[in-house]
Length: 146
Image (cartoon, rainbow, N blue to C red):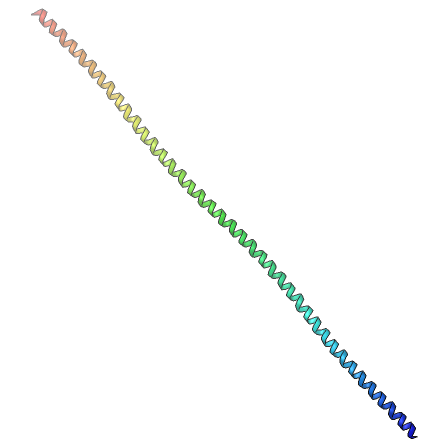
């Protein structure tokens, strides 16, 4: 009987030892499960970070595009300013041409007046010549008649 008791005690010890191992293994499994949960959480964070980095890259691309568009806008404004400056020069040149044309018109008008004056002076001279001729003839008439 004592042998049986000893055998049973031995079996109980073995069972207790095995249960301890089972508990240790369960604990390890729980730890592993916990670690796997952390791994999954970290993977999720990495995915989120990657998504955020993609968003950042997209926003940088948009900013680059905006900067490029702003540069084009500035270039176009500069061209418009240059065009406006050129148009102003064109207008100033037209004004000068109008002034020149007006001055030329005055010159032509004055020439016409001078031509008219010269023509009138010629008529005056012709008339004086006629008067001289008449006076000369009258003088001759007077000489012959007296």
